[in-house]
Length: 163
Image 1: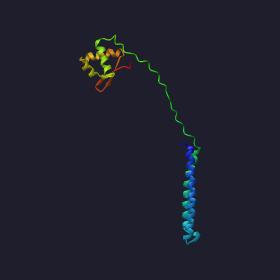
Image 2: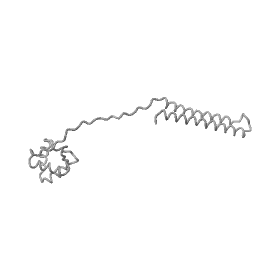
Image 3: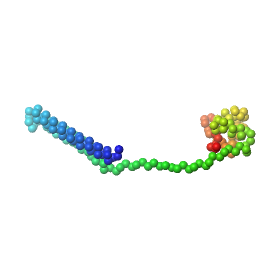
Image 4: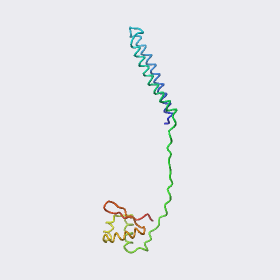
């Protein structure tokens, strides 16, 4: 809801409160007139006046809040910023013609495993040592065919984004 609508609603509520106060005070005065034997000097009339002024002050405060809401500037509308994402270059196919036998085997294993696996698993599947695995992966990484991502005490070897 906008501030103005809320302000009108609050002012309406304060006017209803004033009407209820007037009706209530009229009823109270009638009751005091019938029950008090002291006449116009009865202390209950002072109590009714005090309660009336207090309740009218509260209703006036609610009315002022409603006016403030009506007269205040409308809230700033949030702007939605849409940024255009630059198109990524077209994916390139992996050219395995220039690779040696072990490099081709690594690429085919990664393709079979949906593009990635742990370096230790790769080493086990190829049945080669840590040093040779690291050197092969270094070569493939230099050719920008794979990427190694650190995961705890191990690496995940991932094919770069290509078709």
